[in-house]
Image (cartoon, rainbow, N blue to C red; front, top):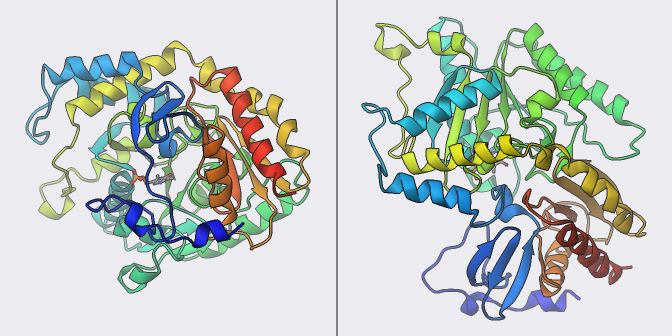
Length: 434
Ligand SMILES: *Cc1c(COP(=O)(O)O)cnc(C)c1O
């Protein structure tokens, strides 16, 4: 079966495109898409209808080409497409910042372009905050298995692995606490959590500028979930040590975990949160870093070094803000779509968890993940995921396993039939490996 993947694909790729996260020698070329509607993607060559089982890299929230969001963007494009945000305010940014602070109960919104920039901004704010107060705190703590983005700061926060090994010498040091991944029927969870908290407490003995985590779900690390109780405990410990807590909600925000935000599910109040991905409903790139007022206040000064010297060309782009406001409208109109999604996964779980080669099922909100036991070791470099992906596509389902971790994270609009079909396709594909 691995014969298929020893083929050399380079010449089948477009000669002018450098694709993301891809070795073109070893991977089939991109599939050309003509259009998308709701949970479906339409391809040419072959002409095929695919269920988008992972919301196009976790961004498509309400579905492809959602008419309401498309309309809001089109309308905004005819009023104001872009404006320099250091000097001008516009209604969409005003509305979005008011809404985001209302629903997060945080106070100040800094706009940027994507998840990585939202993280860079969070980190710079947290790091500078201590200096603004004249306190020396330089240690940053993240978790094993973390992923926070691909720019240098975000990359340094993430787990060190093959994706960033070439840049090891350019990355600043980050301390790592344990991440007590859990799953359904995990009888060791409490023990793991205790050890993880101990590891965090140990690291916090050194004055720490910030602790950053992906609340409840580590996405790119392999859909590794922890219990909300653990996140709450982390927040308590961080607070006791007077450090700052940054919640990277780039993936988990906007209903993905079944709450509007994962930090709410964990019943905590981070000092700073980073948002992107589903923020605009997946229509346009935009990132937000939202902080408490006390943090913002420390940047107000006559001393130039206390200014937050950071900004991006497209800061608070009006089209992105219009998309985000429209997406929030949809979330507010039908909260049951994210509140009740978990039940839909649970009702279908037996299709997969009775297969002898599946294990470690975890479900949270719109996400269902598990591991395929098929030899070749755990981790992203396990080729089994690629084979499962290719087979699923043939059956009309687009998924992109993380190594041997297979998961579904569909858009909220997926119909019951499409969701059932997704489970059935995975079942059919996995049956080949028994
Ligand atoms: C995707 C992701 C990022 C990076 O976002 P980009 O928009 O891809 O730069 C950061 N943190 C988490 C948790 C993510 O899932």
